[in-house]
Image (cartoon, rainbow over the protein chains, first blue to last red):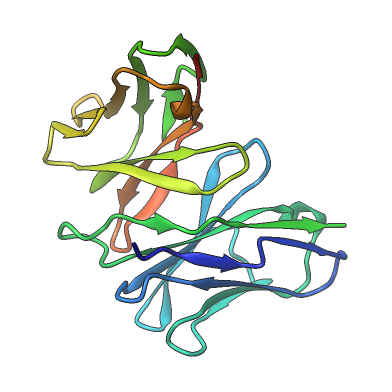
Length: 116
Length: 111
């Protein structure tokens, strides 16, 4: 069964460093998402991506964050200058569509980011 | 209450018993999805119910949705120790169907 994959599973970085989190969505899906979950808290929406552009983003997704689909299979989240409060589990998700019976979002296993 | 609040926060039952978790939300939705998360792991999709549906079944899972009360419930019948996990509801809305997650219910099934 197809699944969303994410790499790395864990990442430790120093404050101020750039990190790139990678995701490979399910191949025939058109909508891609990033969410994050700070330890012990709710899962929070960061950004959605469709047709090679951001379709919606949350207040969390400020200028330090960017997303890219560089090669038609990978979907990346870049944090330009990490802060301590960026420490969280980051989940990638994809769905075939955003409605019409094809809106189920499938999540990857997550990347645990620790900023020191 | 916040969008996507669940109760109870924690539930402990014996194997074989049924577990019911409730979710309330505030805004209009296109759909509501339930996910399971084992400790520190990824989110596993369980079931989706659309805003025009009232009840849905999948195996031992039964989900109801009451849009007039803005609430949903997840029933797990004949629970097993392997059902021990956190369960989250997530409402989908807007053009991109972004999900807004609830606070989760921690279910412990005692063997």
